[in-house]
Structure formats: C-alpha cells, structure tokens
Length: 472
Ligand code: 6PG
Image (cartoon, rainbow, N blue to C red; front, side, top):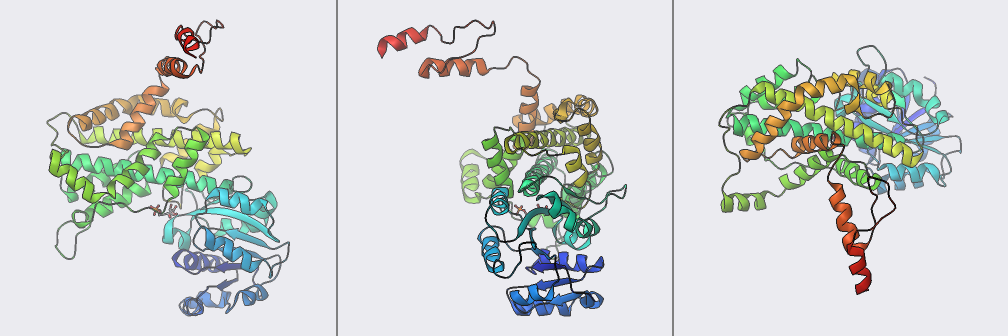
C-alpha cells in the first residue's frame, strides 16, 4: 500500500465512522487518537479494511506515516479542542499540507482560522448525517478555497451520500467558513423540522387523543406523501417503538426535556446579527429551552391547570399533514433567505440551488421536497422561496390548514410555537401595508428618530417634535 495522503484525528463515533468510510472507498488513511488504546482498538475492529488503515501512536507518527500533499481531517469537539489540535500540528506540517475541520465548528471560528496565521492550509467542512451518515454517506458542505476543494473533492465526493439521480451530496459552497455557516443553517432547519413534527405529535396526542402506535401509523402515512423525509420516517419509528421494560410505547416513557449542543442557537444568534428573520427556527430553539425547565412547567401546571384540552371538533389528520407541509416550506424559505443575507454580508456567492441539492441525501434534513426546492431556487436566484410559483401553489393549498391548526391550538391550549411563528411570518410577508408605521411614530415621539412619509414629503417629524423641542 502506498503511504496515505489522507489522515484523520479523533476516533470518536463520527471520526471512526468517517475513517471506515474513507478506507472502504479505497483510500489509504492514517489515523490518530489522543488516547492510544482507542486507535489500537479502532484498527483491530476494522476487519478487512484494516489493511488500508495506518494507526499512528503519536501525532508526529501520523504526519510521518503520510505522503504529501497531506490532507488531515479533524474530528474533535468544536471550540478550544480544534485550536489546541491546530497548535499541536503547527510544528509538524508543511505550508502545502491541508487541515480540514469536519466538526460542527462555529463558522466565525472557521473564518478566523482560515484567514489568520496558520503555517499550513486550513478548510472547514460541515458534515451531516450522524454516525450512520458518516459511515455510509454523509452530506458534505465545504468551505475553503477552490484549490483546497480540488485537492480533497475526489475523496469527499466518493464518501458522500448520493442523491436519487446519482449526484454526490458534497459540494464546495464558498470560501472560509461558508461550509460551516451552511451547516449551521442546516442545523437550525433540523431543529425547526423536529419541533414542528413534535408540535403535530402534541396535537395528535393531546388534541385528538391518539395513542403512540396510531401516531406512528399517521407519520408513516405522511412519509409516503409530500412530507417524505428522514425526520418524519424516524418519528414514525420512534412513536411505534415498544418499551422493553413496561411493554407500552417507549415514547410515553421518554422525559420531555430536549437536549442541544448549541448549533441551532448559533443560527438564531447569527440571524439576529444579520437582521434576517427566521422565526420558525428561533421558536424551535426557544421550545427546547422551555422544555428543559421541567420543574417550572410542573409548577405552572399546578397553578393554572394543564393547558392542553381535547379538540372539540373540526380538525382532520389531513389538516395536520397540510399544516406540517406549509410550516416546512415557510421554515426553509426563511433559512434560504438567511443565506441570501449572509451572502451579501460576508461577500459569499452562496449557490442556494446547490445547497438544496447537497441536502437531498445523507443529512438529517434530507427530504423529497428538496428536489423541488433546488429547481425553484434556480429560477430567479435571490427571490424568496415563498414567492416561487411551485411553492406559492403549495402554500395556497396548505395555508388554510395551517391557519386552522394554529387557531385550534390557541383555543385548546396546544402550544404550537414554530407552526404559529410560520403563520405569523407568512401573514406579515403578504401584507404590503403593515403596522410598523406605528413603531416609527412611537420612535419619533420619544426619540425624534424621524420617519419617511408615504407621499415622500420632507417632513420627517410629527407635531410632537415641537413640544419635545420646547421642553429641551
Ligand atoms: C447532523 C446533526 C448533528 C448534530 C446533532 C445533535 O447534521 O448530523 O446536525 O451534527 O450535532 O443532530 O444536535 P443537537 O445536540 O444540538 O440536537
């Protein structure tokens, strides 16, 4: 075997799966983990692939085991661990060597690392798909320079998932932290998709009184229609699983407090900085935070009584399916619009159809709808997804159901923050004359901030300005 040009540091679940995937696709790979026994154990269980894997005992062994131009993938926890690893590699690598951060880095960190002072080349890639994706085909969102991409594209495209048309779901999306930025938006959408499914589950359970097995069947049915997606598919499986301890539905035994590593939160923070409205994603982050406050929620229920009430009448399973379709389109419209805002802010030419295509397979948010999104985004680039004819037709068909579901939720104490945020955003986005004239009047009243008039006259203040001036 020739010396590997690919190396990988960090043999945790994701790193080990990725290394196996790379070896399986025929690329020799050198691997190293901080704990030597982990490296040895990984090599020992690699079976037939072990012959393509070179386990290194030290970091300098890893570098020495490789030939140039080297490309070393980092699969270590985001944050300080990446900076520490880069510092450790600095004395060992040559300027032409490339280090690839494939973790869930904050894209600002990737920008900093790619732009400043490392004595080797550096690129950040977003990798989605969990352990199974890493092992059998993830979706890969690459940042970095065109040259970085050209060097590693053959490997990344070989290990990536393939869309139904055979295209690998790995693409170069822009310089510096662009790949990690797109991964953050992916994760924001992941949070929102999951939250909207959870909200719909709540209506089925508390509003319609369905048991988990019936809910599983409902989701499985939806997964054969427009909602066909990984997250709806696994939701059906989660709802359908039995608890080996009680024999009842496992879902009923799982504590209702969601964990999070923070990538959804980063997306919400970034959207605020960009002035890009993503209320469905923000609602999903908020809902995870509220879910974690179990004791306070229990105190609230003890004081006010439980919120959810059975629905009296009028909501069908089809309404819920359509509400979820509408919510999903609105959420993606917001996510893609955020990318346009980021592209303008950071000078990135983010290719939104290419991003939709990369998400078609391998990643957590993969869904049938992404094909149509890719086609729609390609017409009149930059235009909001909700204004594209294909999705406008779908929204016309499904918005009445979303409105019925959100209204029924409000009347029956079924909290639907993400679906409700989608509805409010949609209504604002189709209102040419909104209500912010009142905000402008208020701002001018207390702060003389000025306003524009509809007739274009140059009278930027209201009559209150005179009182204000007299007082000051
Ligand atoms: C993916 C996921 C993954 C993420 C987990 C956990 O695309 O494979 O986004 O990267 O880390 O889903 O995220 P939370 O712990 O924040 O839910």
